[in-house]
Length: 92
Image (cartoon, rainbow, N blue to C red; front, side, top):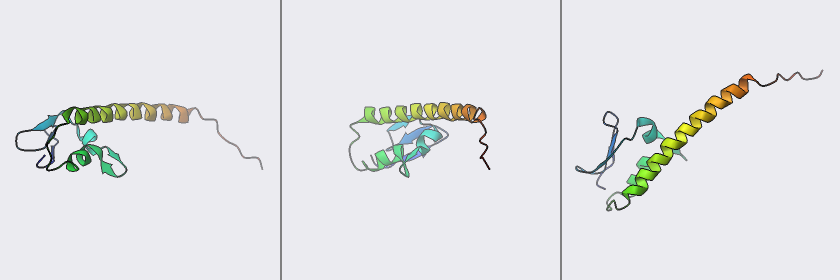
């Protein structure tokens, strides 16, 4: 891994002049846990080393994509629940 560059137009993360990962959406690239972009941090922590765990990176990217789908479903369900919440009337 010589460098880490994300190209949103190509949906690619390049790690050197020849190697890259495809299919990485901007949302996946910007997904954060603990203030860090997960996909970027994983690669930057391995800069200067040989990328011998490509499948792990692909699985992490897939897990992020799936997590984002589930989070959207939860957000939509929450809106439905919020619409059906009983109003609270405090007693005087």
